[in-house]
Image (cartoon, rainbow, N blue to C red; front, side, top):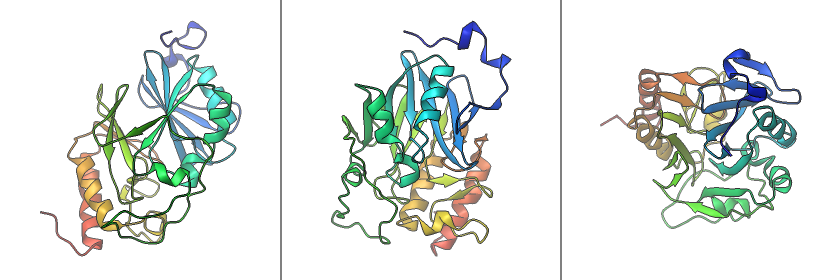
Length: 258
């Protein structure tokens, strides 16, 4: 069944920002992209497709009721779940949501999928900091994604650095880029691995900052129309800000941009 607006009303008749009854705040970024935020800083996303929603990430534990109620508010089912990576603030509600949506498709990057089973082994040539923040999950993916794979309107982009198997997703319809934690915007736009005194988490919880800088540049080369991130607000026309963030990322790695 195609998506229908709530009670036959246009979403333009609802506030762009507003609480959705339980634990998340809904922001309509575009007609196809909805940001769900918990605690003012942890985001997941609903992407509208013809048959319902793709849920990108699941937030912290305890977020399931808010996500499911938001989808009901928007009167479209969640058909599939896709993960940018397996950190605790992105998979926390995964099992609870899967249990409540029988048959939902779960997709995750092929490299990242091992972390759901708490397999922290590294492949040959992989180097980085100690892997932290992976709680695992009981749910098992029904599809493993490779770089360039399509999931509905979303194209998977392999972006290692924050984690070894991190993925971002580009909506090919309008250029919306869901970057996961490859970038954050909590205190200005920064790439994963970059240290800022007021918000050190992109550095503290990123596995390999050199890989992260290269992945940030890879995402910039896609020329996204907007940049949606796991932590912070979405940025429209982000290319200039991405350029500055990438320059700082390479500088902190002791490298110069080509």
